[in-house]
Image 1 (cartoon, rainbow, N blue to C red):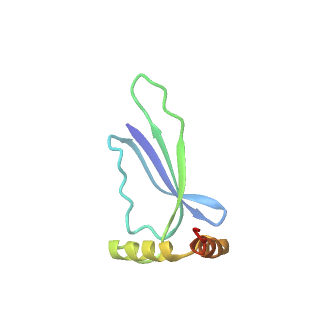
Image 2 (tube, rainbow, N blue to C red; image 1 turned 30 degrees about the horizontal axis):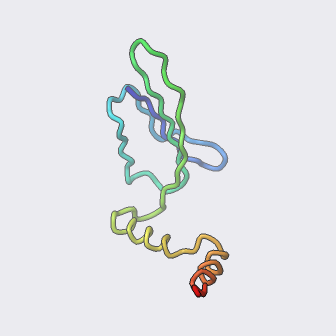
Image 3 (cartoon, one colour; image 1 turned 60 degrees about the vertical axis):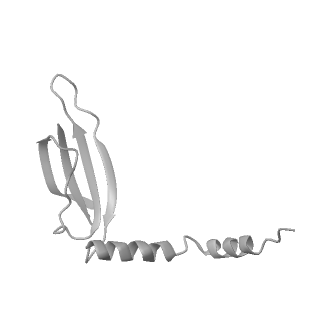
Length: 101
């Protein structure tokens, strides 16, 4: 069994958006109704006759606007074309100009 708390960052504090207890599933559906922004998910496992697990937390960003499968694919393609740093282009240029003699 699992408990989870979903929180959204608003300014410098976290606001609880969703809180559920005693779930049997390991899957959580994230509603498209949630606005974009920075989120934090905290999960704890529980079982009869055992101590609850330590709280596991992760933070993630959610895109503002259209989150349809087509929009996500376009976003991934756009992200793959962006250079990670300005040095990336220089290194790529140098590697392609290596003389293999």
